[in-house]
Figure: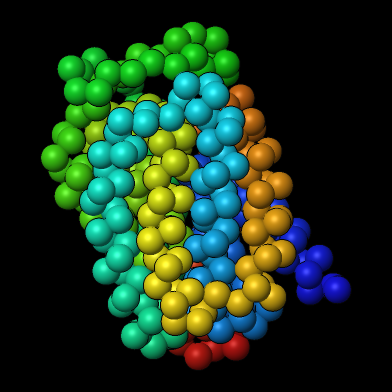
Length: 270
Protein backbone atom coordinates (compact mmCIF):
# COMPACT_ATOMS: atom_id res chain seq x y z
CA UNK A 1 0.00 0.00 0.00
CA UNK A 2 2.85 2.39 0.81
CA UNK A 3 4.29 1.83 -2.67
CA UNK A 4 0.94 2.60 -4.31
CA UNK A 5 0.56 5.80 -2.32
CA UNK A 6 4.11 6.80 -3.19
CA UNK A 7 3.51 6.29 -6.90
CA UNK A 8 0.25 8.26 -6.72
CA UNK A 9 2.01 11.21 -5.08
CA UNK A 10 4.95 11.18 -7.48
CA UNK A 11 2.62 10.88 -10.45
CA UNK A 12 0.54 13.81 -9.17
CA UNK A 13 3.63 16.03 -9.03
CA UNK A 14 4.73 14.78 -12.45
CA UNK A 15 1.30 15.57 -13.84
CA UNK A 16 1.39 19.11 -12.48
CA UNK A 17 4.86 19.92 -13.81
CA UNK A 18 4.46 17.94 -17.02
CA UNK A 19 1.24 19.67 -18.03
CA UNK A 20 2.53 23.08 -16.90
CA UNK A 21 5.54 22.82 -19.23
CA UNK A 22 4.11 20.65 -22.01
CA UNK A 23 6.58 17.81 -21.44
CA UNK A 24 4.15 15.15 -20.25
CA UNK A 25 5.68 14.25 -16.89
CA UNK A 26 7.85 11.45 -18.26
CA UNK A 27 11.03 13.29 -17.32
CA UNK A 28 9.98 12.79 -13.68
CA UNK A 29 8.21 9.43 -13.85
CA UNK A 30 10.98 7.44 -15.55
CA UNK A 31 13.82 8.30 -13.16
CA UNK A 32 11.64 8.02 -10.05
CA UNK A 33 10.19 4.65 -11.03
CA UNK A 34 13.63 3.36 -11.95
CA UNK A 35 15.62 4.79 -9.05
CA UNK A 36 13.19 4.99 -6.13
CA UNK A 37 10.93 2.01 -6.82
CA UNK A 38 13.38 -0.28 -8.60
CA UNK A 39 11.23 -0.68 -11.70
CA UNK A 40 13.17 -2.06 -14.72
CA UNK A 41 13.98 0.83 -17.04
CA UNK A 42 11.94 -0.45 -19.99
CA UNK A 43 8.90 -1.07 -17.78
CA UNK A 44 9.37 2.43 -16.33
CA UNK A 45 9.42 3.88 -19.84
CA UNK A 46 6.27 1.96 -20.79
CA UNK A 47 4.53 3.23 -17.64
CA UNK A 48 5.64 6.76 -18.42
CA UNK A 49 4.18 6.52 -21.91
CA UNK A 50 0.78 5.62 -20.43
CA UNK A 51 1.13 8.62 -18.11
CA UNK A 52 1.94 10.92 -21.03
CA UNK A 53 -1.29 9.89 -22.76
CA UNK A 54 -3.23 10.64 -19.57
CA UNK A 55 -1.49 14.01 -19.14
CA UNK A 56 -2.28 15.03 -22.71
CA UNK A 57 -5.95 14.10 -22.43
CA UNK A 58 -6.54 15.92 -19.15
CA UNK A 59 -4.50 19.03 -19.94
CA UNK A 60 -6.44 19.67 -23.13
CA UNK A 61 -9.68 20.10 -21.20
CA UNK A 62 -8.23 23.38 -19.93
CA UNK A 63 -5.93 24.56 -22.73
CA UNK A 64 -8.36 23.87 -25.57
CA UNK A 65 -11.19 25.58 -23.70
CA UNK A 66 -8.99 28.67 -23.37
CA UNK A 67 -8.19 28.64 -27.09
CA UNK A 68 -4.45 28.30 -26.44
CA UNK A 69 -3.97 25.04 -28.35
CA UNK A 70 -3.02 25.55 -31.99
CA UNK A 71 -4.84 22.53 -33.46
CA UNK A 72 -3.62 23.02 -37.03
CA UNK A 73 0.02 23.30 -36.01
CA UNK A 74 -0.25 20.36 -33.64
CA UNK A 75 -1.76 18.04 -36.24
CA UNK A 76 0.74 19.11 -38.90
CA UNK A 77 3.76 18.41 -36.72
CA UNK A 78 2.23 15.24 -35.31
CA UNK A 79 2.60 13.52 -38.67
CA UNK A 80 6.38 13.84 -38.31
CA UNK A 81 6.54 12.99 -34.61
CA UNK A 82 4.44 9.85 -35.04
CA UNK A 83 6.89 8.52 -37.62
CA UNK A 84 9.76 9.27 -35.24
CA UNK A 85 7.94 7.70 -32.28
CA UNK A 86 7.34 4.48 -34.20
CA UNK A 87 11.05 4.17 -34.96
CA UNK A 88 12.01 5.11 -31.40
CA UNK A 89 9.67 2.56 -29.85
CA UNK A 90 11.14 -0.24 -31.94
CA UNK A 91 14.67 0.85 -31.03
CA UNK A 92 13.99 1.10 -27.30
CA UNK A 93 13.05 -2.56 -26.82
CA UNK A 94 16.34 -3.62 -28.41
CA UNK A 95 18.74 -1.34 -26.49
CA UNK A 96 20.48 -2.13 -23.18
CA UNK A 97 18.89 -0.50 -20.11
CA UNK A 98 22.05 1.38 -19.11
CA UNK A 99 22.25 2.98 -22.53
CA UNK A 100 18.69 4.22 -22.08
CA UNK A 101 19.51 5.61 -18.63
CA UNK A 102 22.53 7.48 -19.98
CA UNK A 103 20.46 8.80 -22.89
CA UNK A 104 17.80 9.97 -20.47
CA UNK A 105 20.38 11.85 -18.39
CA UNK A 106 21.64 13.63 -21.50
CA UNK A 107 18.07 14.59 -22.40
CA UNK A 108 17.45 16.07 -18.95
CA UNK A 109 20.63 18.17 -19.10
CA UNK A 110 19.66 19.36 -22.58
CA UNK A 111 16.21 20.49 -21.44
CA UNK A 112 17.67 22.29 -18.41
CA UNK A 113 20.12 24.10 -20.69
CA UNK A 114 17.36 25.17 -23.04
CA UNK A 115 15.31 26.50 -20.15
CA UNK A 116 18.25 28.45 -18.75
CA UNK A 117 18.65 30.17 -22.13
CA UNK A 118 14.99 31.16 -22.37
CA UNK A 119 13.76 32.44 -19.00
CA UNK A 120 11.21 34.71 -20.59
CA UNK A 121 9.00 34.43 -23.65
CA UNK A 122 9.56 35.41 -27.26
CA UNK A 123 7.98 38.47 -28.80
CA UNK A 124 5.31 37.07 -31.17
CA UNK A 125 5.44 38.30 -34.76
CA UNK A 126 2.74 38.06 -37.43
CA UNK A 127 2.82 35.46 -40.18
CA UNK A 128 0.44 34.25 -42.86
CA UNK A 129 1.13 30.66 -41.83
CA UNK A 130 -1.42 29.33 -39.32
CA UNK A 131 -2.21 32.69 -37.65
CA UNK A 132 -3.80 32.29 -34.22
CA UNK A 133 -4.71 34.23 -31.09
CA UNK A 134 -5.60 33.59 -27.46
CA UNK A 135 -6.28 35.59 -24.30
CA UNK A 136 -3.54 35.52 -21.65
CA UNK A 137 -5.03 36.06 -18.15
CA UNK A 138 -1.59 36.76 -16.65
CA UNK A 139 -0.92 39.63 -19.07
CA UNK A 140 -4.60 40.57 -19.43
CA UNK A 141 -4.38 40.93 -23.17
CA UNK A 142 -4.93 39.05 -26.40
CA UNK A 143 -1.80 37.50 -27.91
CA UNK A 144 -1.68 37.18 -31.71
CA UNK A 145 1.03 35.25 -33.52
CA UNK A 146 1.92 33.32 -36.66
CA UNK A 147 4.03 30.22 -37.28
CA UNK A 148 7.51 30.57 -38.79
CA UNK A 149 9.95 28.04 -40.28
CA UNK A 150 7.31 25.32 -40.61
CA UNK A 151 9.44 23.01 -42.84
CA UNK A 152 12.33 23.11 -40.32
CA UNK A 153 9.94 22.41 -37.47
CA UNK A 154 8.50 19.47 -39.38
CA UNK A 155 11.94 17.90 -39.87
CA UNK A 156 13.00 18.42 -36.25
CA UNK A 157 9.72 16.95 -35.04
CA UNK A 158 10.81 13.59 -36.46
CA UNK A 159 13.72 13.68 -34.00
CA UNK A 160 11.38 14.72 -31.19
CA UNK A 161 9.14 11.77 -31.93
CA UNK A 162 12.10 9.41 -31.95
CA UNK A 163 13.14 10.63 -28.50
CA UNK A 164 9.58 10.07 -27.31
CA UNK A 165 9.51 6.46 -28.42
CA UNK A 166 13.03 5.79 -27.20
CA UNK A 167 12.76 7.30 -23.73
CA UNK A 168 9.03 7.42 -22.98
CA UNK A 169 8.86 11.18 -22.38
CA UNK A 170 6.30 12.21 -24.99
CA UNK A 171 8.84 14.27 -26.93
CA UNK A 172 7.58 17.50 -25.37
CA UNK A 173 11.04 18.29 -24.02
CA UNK A 174 12.09 18.85 -27.64
CA UNK A 175 8.78 20.04 -29.07
CA UNK A 176 8.52 23.00 -26.72
CA UNK A 177 11.94 24.49 -27.67
CA UNK A 178 11.30 23.75 -31.36
CA UNK A 179 7.96 25.58 -31.46
CA UNK A 180 8.95 28.40 -29.11
CA UNK A 181 12.54 29.17 -30.10
CA UNK A 182 12.54 28.21 -33.79
CA UNK A 183 8.94 28.63 -34.94
CA UNK A 184 8.03 31.79 -33.02
CA UNK A 185 5.04 30.38 -31.11
CA UNK A 186 4.45 32.06 -27.70
CA UNK A 187 5.33 29.86 -24.74
CA UNK A 188 1.82 29.26 -23.43
CA UNK A 189 0.52 28.36 -26.88
CA UNK A 190 3.56 26.12 -27.27
CA UNK A 191 2.86 24.34 -23.98
CA UNK A 192 -0.79 23.86 -24.87
CA UNK A 193 -0.02 22.54 -28.36
CA UNK A 194 2.75 20.29 -27.05
CA UNK A 195 0.32 18.79 -24.54
CA UNK A 196 -1.96 17.89 -27.45
CA UNK A 197 0.84 16.34 -29.49
CA UNK A 198 2.54 14.28 -26.80
CA UNK A 199 -0.56 12.15 -26.28
CA UNK A 200 -0.77 11.15 -29.93
CA UNK A 201 2.97 10.48 -30.09
CA UNK A 202 2.92 8.42 -26.91
CA UNK A 203 -0.01 6.33 -28.14
CA UNK A 204 2.11 5.19 -31.08
CA UNK A 205 4.93 4.05 -28.79
CA UNK A 206 2.51 2.52 -26.27
CA UNK A 207 1.30 0.00 -28.82
CA UNK A 208 4.87 -1.26 -29.28
CA UNK A 209 5.68 -1.48 -25.59
CA UNK A 210 2.37 -3.18 -24.85
CA UNK A 211 3.00 -5.74 -27.57
CA UNK A 212 6.38 -6.51 -26.01
CA UNK A 213 4.85 -7.01 -22.56
CA UNK A 214 6.45 -4.01 -20.85
CA UNK A 215 3.17 -2.36 -19.74
CA UNK A 216 2.63 -3.63 -16.18
CA UNK A 217 -0.77 -2.63 -14.67
CA UNK A 218 0.76 -2.84 -11.18
CA UNK A 219 2.73 0.30 -11.98
CA UNK A 220 0.73 1.85 -14.83
CA UNK A 221 -2.67 2.08 -13.10
CA UNK A 222 -1.69 4.07 -9.97
CA UNK A 223 0.71 6.20 -12.02
CA UNK A 224 -2.03 7.08 -14.51
CA UNK A 225 -4.50 7.95 -11.75
CA UNK A 226 -2.01 10.26 -10.04
CA UNK A 227 -0.98 11.89 -13.29
CA UNK A 228 -4.60 12.62 -14.22
CA UNK A 229 -5.15 14.54 -10.99
CA UNK A 230 -1.95 16.53 -11.43
CA UNK A 231 -2.61 17.27 -15.10
CA UNK A 232 -5.95 18.80 -14.16
CA UNK A 233 -4.23 21.32 -11.89
CA UNK A 234 -1.08 22.04 -13.91
CA UNK A 235 -2.63 23.92 -16.85
CA UNK A 236 -4.57 26.20 -14.51
CA UNK A 237 -1.34 27.18 -12.79
CA UNK A 238 0.54 27.61 -16.09
CA UNK A 239 -2.09 29.99 -17.45
CA UNK A 240 -1.68 32.33 -14.48
CA UNK A 241 2.08 32.19 -13.83
CA UNK A 242 4.99 33.59 -15.80
CA UNK A 243 7.35 31.26 -17.63
CA UNK A 244 10.29 32.54 -15.57
CA UNK A 245 8.88 31.21 -12.29
CA UNK A 246 8.18 27.77 -13.73
CA UNK A 247 11.55 27.46 -15.42
CA UNK A 248 13.74 28.17 -12.40
CA UNK A 249 12.06 25.52 -10.24
CA UNK A 250 12.03 22.92 -12.96
CA UNK A 251 15.68 23.43 -13.90
CA UNK A 252 16.70 22.24 -10.43
CA UNK A 253 14.47 19.17 -10.68
CA UNK A 254 15.84 18.26 -14.09
CA UNK A 255 19.48 18.53 -13.08
CA UNK A 256 19.04 16.46 -9.90
CA UNK A 257 17.38 13.61 -11.76
CA UNK A 258 19.89 13.81 -14.60
CA UNK A 259 22.78 13.30 -12.19
CA UNK A 260 21.02 10.38 -10.48
CA UNK A 261 20.25 8.64 -13.76
CA UNK A 262 23.78 9.16 -15.05
CA UNK A 263 25.23 7.63 -11.88
CA UNK A 264 22.95 4.62 -12.22
CA UNK A 265 23.96 4.19 -15.87
CA UNK A 266 27.62 4.20 -14.80
CA UNK A 267 26.91 1.53 -12.19
CA UNK A 268 27.31 3.83 -9.17
CA UNK A 269 24.83 3.04 -6.40
CA UNK A 270 22.39 5.85 -5.59
